[in-house]
Image (cartoon, rainbow, N blue to C red):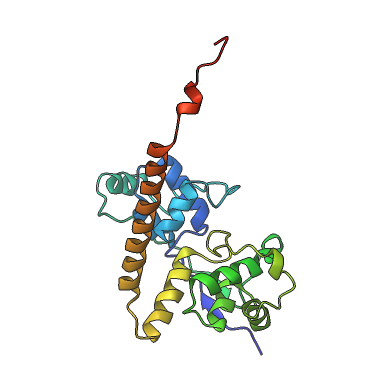
Length: 228
């Protein structure tokens, strides 16, 4: 049976993260403007800017590659509400093969169990099928991590699949929101509640640290001794 062919989507840069890196380093655009043009999540752009992800990516100039104009960049730099516009190609769009299973680079395949463990802990609303799609894992692996029979259970370090590059922040957010809505829950309200809760935890920790520093006994540092 022949592989189904689809028309390539050229409404976004050919190399989104590399293009985002160039825009971060060479323009005054906001993370939201860069994210929307590159088809990324603004948190992902923030992570690229902070070098939390994407180390080793070579920035790609969208102007030299006829995807953007300098005039459009300058216009958007002066207006945060403006959005970059992709230059429409005047050539026939290439055909690409239909999307198959998610490909994971060999170097990242050992990170999959850590990502699955993180999703199970932090996103209990996600089904095994959804977790498999997000990180490119299998149901057998997901189940073994759930019931702690996976051979790496003792050494596993749960890590976000978005942070280690197995999926994007946008994909993770969409999957979580879809699962929550299917359960009759409001993802926006829950995200806000989680933010408020985290702020309260952070405030309590800061208050505890300040209290500890105020009650610390410094007298031992000022004891007089012979010969001093």
